Length: 539
Image (cartoon, rainbow, N blue to C red; front, side, top):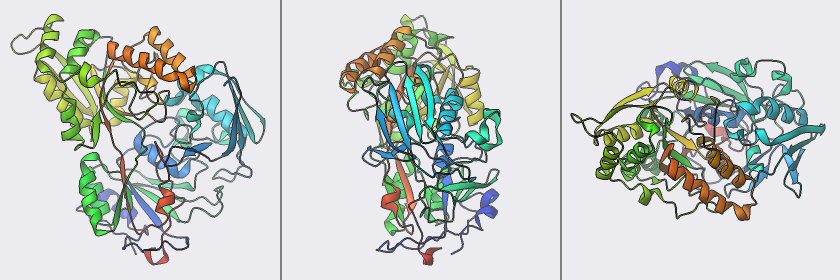
């Protein structure tokens, strides 16, 4: 059946593009049956502009969703969090934990037909590593990355890094083609917006502000897949429009904002939509980064007061509709073997505006004409960040702080916070991946660069950096003690206020088959649409 977009629910800007897409949305059949080829999936992305599709260069969520269809990597995870081979069929780790040998799959080709070799893996690490926010801990530890033959990649480290394998997950380390990028300016290369990859689909076209289309990659290494002809990402910035689009059968997939989960579940009662909770999800932590190099936030007493002034349980209820928990300390609770419950922000920094006011009085910021000082709170102007920032603004204002809320376009916000570091306080949600080395360390270790989503606060503590380094190198059985000290230092210094840790859901139309296999993932993985298929009657 032909996909028709209603102007009442989705922007007319991309309607003309998607009218041509085939993606049936009739009721599901009881038996999946045998996969057949054909049809299109339309997935809704929370974006109008995406600066780059290359997720070695960005950890922007819309780009990450899209990357799953065109990019691939050495390994991934199933829904239980167990590693699964992708382009590496197996890997070996030396007894001293310093040498990793990856054995690569035979006969793999890039989407442009060129052969994939170990040289591509070496090139990706050496040339893209400096841009990758998740590799900040790994890169200084590399002694050598080599390709002794076309199907073997060897990584030698100066010292052990226990999370090394986690860093080669396909979401963290998507592989890039050496023959496309070599000798070129990586940051500005046209392939960042028209990528050549190893995923089940290949880039076809980009209608600015409307949609991005990928078609079946005939060179994909799983030769019988994908079954679908194409995947179209509809760029729909308004949350309500995305919800309306899936309810009205105009898209096949979207990731609801937490405030939309209940409405999506209610809509799913008609049997045409399935809401999937990603139970083994990576930490999604809403935080306030504080610039410790200027103004009142230079003072640890002020930072403590700001934390006491925030009712984090209200954020859980009002912003996340109860589908989140308050963050307990710097190490998210998902890391069960590393999280120490003795450091608990719920008690250390319990909501107490009276106490917050007294701390500010002692710090030399008494109320004068109803005000203590002024501060700018910067945020990306879209959910859930803006809603979190509004609660923080209200509660800081209640203790006499003059808070200017600046809700900005993502690119302007990124430049202000990470490139120029011209901010007082900034709200964002950060993903922790599978280990503190991925996505947690980046908030606290010394950072003199301007990589987006890496510590912009000016906090640089050699004591902490050593603890983080020791923790990352320790055997798994010894890491918890190191991460307890890690969390204690962060709780003492507070360059970042951790607010909430949210649950993750995705919604998909049930006319698609193979969904159990398609959603066999965890942490930061999203559908690559290689497993799903549409019956002929739905195409």
